[in-house]
Length: 122
Length: 178
Image (cartoon, helix red, strand yellow):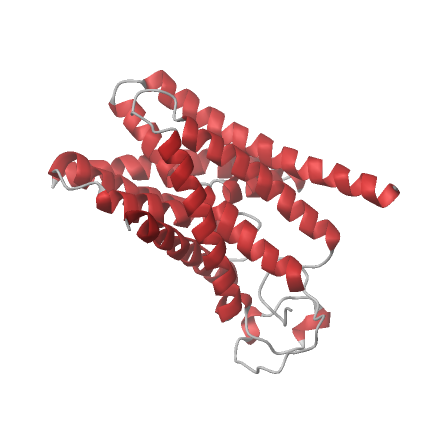
């Protein structure tokens, strides 16, 4: 049952990513893939907070599996982030490519740590 | 079929079923061939959402099983996520390159992109679990592993996505020459 709910939550996350990506691209036309960065950073923040609830408040890991592995996992994406970096390199936008790859990594890891720390402090 | 949808790839109507009028003029692409045709943007079409959802189920299920096969204990190298992310980047690179070489983003190619690409590869790979593993490695004092895992994943993802593109480009090149 947990597995089924996790798969459905993952698909919901993918859908949320698809919608947010389209919504952002309508409003912000640029070669820089801002939507994917925002998606990965917010998803990492949420997963960090969820992991904190399990680690520091002794909650069952079921929710981390369904919402974390499922929703956050399906919502955030590593493949699109990597692909978009390659596309930036191909277009000769090397600085933006580096900014995308390094920025996504630093911001997502920071957001995840912030989510974890926030729950720990509460 | 694609009727004046918002997207980065130039769209062309192939099946001529565009009868839905809507008010999303600002979402129409610049391509003059399609700009005049009214149509619902891709992300507002139930069929497009269904393809992404279906692919999302498969991608998440595959990731769930690989993570269970190679569980991460918080101190060693997170092999499951590492292999998932690198292989997913390779497949997405190959898929998008292959579809792009076969024709415009419409019909079955668009459905394949939404289902296998946006849904499947997107949900199979994960940035959040990757970020959490980096944080937990650091928290357990494995700073070196955390940094090398983070750096190797990001560089590896870009290299494998590029390899996927190059592989599919050479396959297509050989097939068109044959």
